[in-house]
Image (tube, rainbow over all chains, first blue to last red; front, side, top):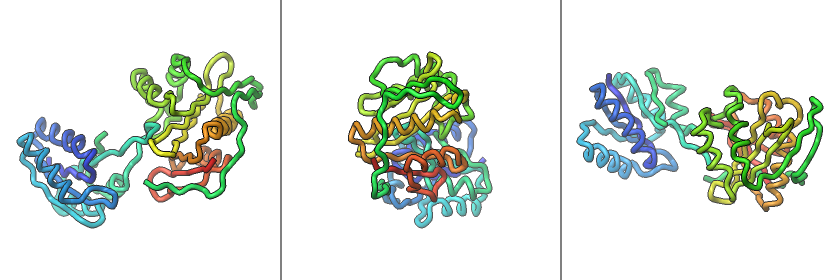
Length: 121
Length: 173
């Protein structure tokens, strides 16, 4: 299978990348990472640097692509164009009370993606 | 994140303790939580109907319930309980998010719902919030849950973020 991992915020990048790479190591899935920009998130250069560091520290071979513009639609469009089997994204943060809150990117991807989506908790 | 709050405060609200008779004729006592009684909370949440969960809370198994309770039964949070027939049947909480803002949630056991306990519990919690000089309260509620949204509106909450998955409402005390 070909997996596309969408990364939009630093604090969750490790967890999302970790889950996707652990799975890819077990199954031999081919991994591509898409770094996307959000209004309240870090710059695309910073995110990309963090992703590259994470991957090289673990000797993981993955293509890393960057996208600006509307994050959710960029992810879905790229995944469709390149025929990915699955999109792996952050499954939301928890509020002070512990409630799961889906971010805009996750919501858009869930509603619009035509391939299987995995939310990482 | 900047949240929008109504310009005018809601209330005033009556503070606990409050004793009343619910629609089913049961005597219900509402009290401010001052510590202890952890096992009573645990018992209530173990009996909580999974269909009444919202956005992943309350958690469903004992270790996770314990961990979650430890994170909300804290000194800087405000907790109010409803007891009837010798056990805890409702719990409402205001949890700080590190700023001036407090997140609200309310839980009532299935057998005690639709008997007026929820309304008394939430207004008592807001009364306790006033006692603690809390001014900004927000909550999120699932879009489809019109019963909960109606309850929040009735006590003075106004929609504050309506475009995302969960519906957010806020209230000024």
